[in-house]
Length: 175
Image 1 (cartoon, rainbow, N blue to C red):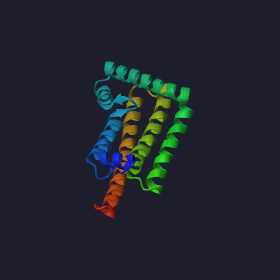
Image 2: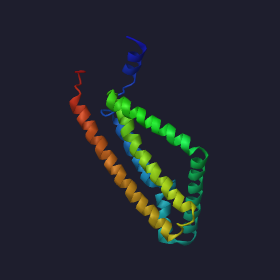
Image 3: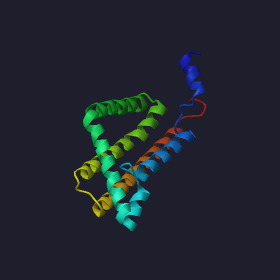
Image 4: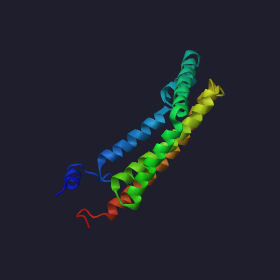
């Protein structure tokens, strides 16, 4: 038995039959839909209901998060995007070309989350220009959240279908 076999026998890399993978998937999408552009959704609801100081807090936090995200993008966006695309491409090739289940699961988790991140950057651009404040900001965040929930629902559906197909097609005895 070599080192790789020993390591993989210790660490279970069968993702689709592992409860932890499904918990990570659920928690990831729950967080992405709750923290819209880094702003907690309960804060958006409170601003919509109460207005006043809650709305000012929402405007301030949204502007801070937008500037923060765009600052990172301007400083190293090309490198980050290039690196991230290389990671996703590697995961796709390892997973779907070479049949490595952990890479398949990682790709099915990270690719849709990347789409959510890109949509978040688009919203950040609109917020940073000052086009979205007060009620238009609340509406934009609500719509962004609906879109992210739709992306998350589709991602979970595709991941579930792929995982079920994978689990049904792979024998437990290694055949």
